Image (cartoon, rainbow, N blue to C red; front, side, top):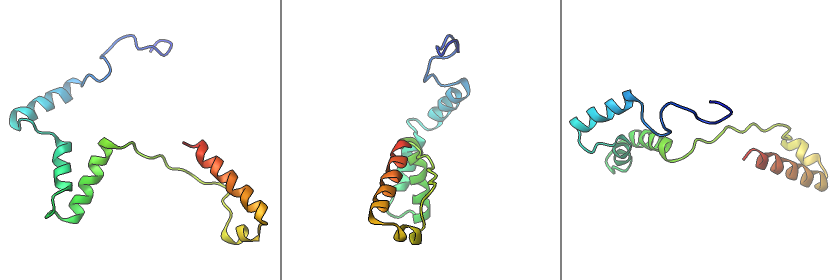
Length: 105
């Protein structure tokens, strides 16, 4: 990319050749097949094993929800330290932790 501007290649969202070939072969063999919908059907099948349903739900979620980032909390006081604080110190620490958490959004 030149100066942050796309100057060539495929247009954004255009499938690469391998993916396009795979989708065509799947459509020939299984017209209208959509693996995400198939997993959703398994996830909602009342007689499917609960472990299979859980796995299917996890897989479908990858396509429907953004993956959450891991948040590392630093300087969180232990319960003993927290209880030893004055009420004002506790409120200040809670406010600080909330700001830290909100800054990570």
